[in-house]
Each structure stands twice: as structure tokens, then as C-alpha cells.
Image (cartoon, rainbow, N blue to C red; front, side):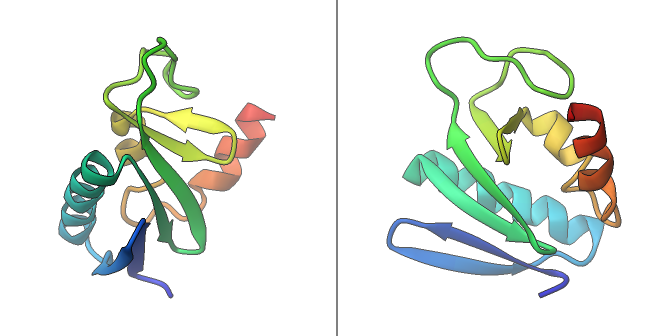
Length: 107
């Protein structure tokens, strides 16, 4: 479903529009809230599947910028991103090719 995001968590799910940059910011606010409440959520957006978790106690670095992760970790496959990199790249409106370029760099 293009332009619709699904946030899945233990006990339910939430559908949110994600067509405009404003919609994506509201979506990310929901992601922050639900992952803080449930610990782990799954985000499906534009046929891409993400897992968002609370950061572990051990220090880990973002795959993209190599800075230490904040309180949330955005997992895309085996790659972990900080919130800033997730917002800047794959979750940014209109950036459908980000995943392909990311995998080329990571591979």
C-alpha cells in the first residue's frame, strides 16, 4: 500500500498515512511513542519492512553515520540506523531508491 504505513506491535497495529513530509513526521512520532511503550515494533512502509527497538545497554554504532545509537534503533535487515539517519534517508518522503543505494554501499 503506497502512502500508507502500518505500525505493528504486540496486541495490535495502527495504519497511518505517509504521503507528505508532514505525514511522515507524524508517523515517526507514532513510531517513537509505540516503540517506547512496547519495546519493539514493526514498521511497514512502501513495501519496506523495518523493526524499531529500544537501544540495548551496550554501545552500538549506526551503520550509516557510525555515531552511537540513541534510545531507538531502526533495523533495516541486519543494518541498524539511528533516528537521524532513518529520517534523513529511507523514511524521508519521496526517497524510494534509498534502500537500493544503501545495500550497494553496505555490500
